Length: 159
Image 1 (cartoon, rainbow, N blue to C red):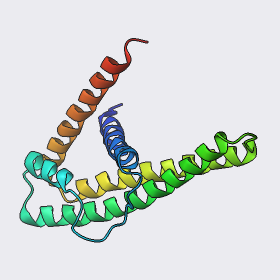
Image 2 (cartoon, rainbow, N blue to C red; image 1 turned 90 degrees about the horizontal axis):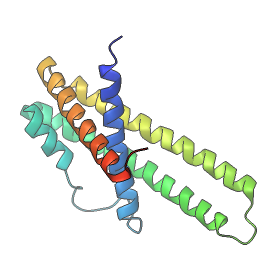
Image 3 (cartoon, rainbow, N blue to C red; image 1 turned 135 degrees about the vertical axis):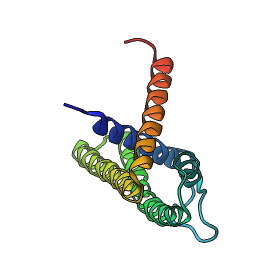
Image 4 (cartoon, helix red, strand yellow; image 1 turned 90 degrees about the vertical axis):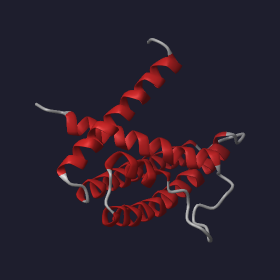
């Protein structure tokens, strides 16, 4: 059975998850929903460069990406709040393990929603691409996934 599409989807989800976690860890003191100029559009530039998007496709990608950033921002903020709440409980003199277990489950549910949101982003991206661009996206994401695996192995050593 050909599992290549599954591996590509997993790679994209990993990449988007790492980006989301970077947002959480790098700027926890800033609100995710902010007023003012739009956030950095690096992902649109990367896809434009690698996929040779038309003006119409780029406009659609910007719309999709804007909604995705909003959804990811809200989920990331919720995750951060739950993690902070759990951290405070864990550091308490007599932590309530039932509450900690419940928060852990809630964090798991939010993480699953984050993964699902990332999956739908890639699904929507693929829907605006032609067949050749989809193949190029698959190759691009495969290379990124391979690079991430090499970095992970290099940083953690043999097991």
